[in-house]
Image 1 (cartoon, rainbow, N blue to C red):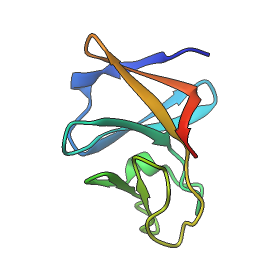
Image 2 (cartoon, one colour):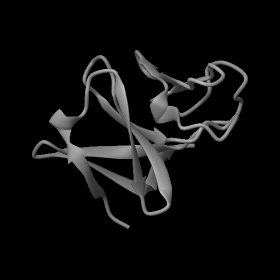
Image 3 (cartoon, rainbow, N blue to C red):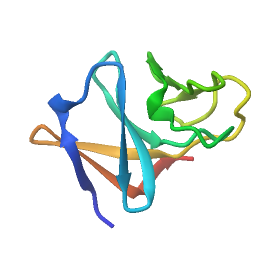
Length: 108
């Protein structure tokens, strides 16, 4: 599969996450405080909770249910109770649009 257009870059709010479904893959698209766009698996590995409903702080996304924070760069959990990482997907910005390939993970 090749990269899929997700949205326009200006549709993403600063320090906010957007849940998208690409095929059968749930992905959280996040624009951090520096304006960098990240794409990580949307499901918390501690529970079946959507991470895009959580809180963006710096380069982390925190699950709203139990407080596990995940690195937007590596997908690794930075706090308990989660201990398994979520996948991180390559993001490409072309002509102001955000593209993600759900088969192109850069970290798991």
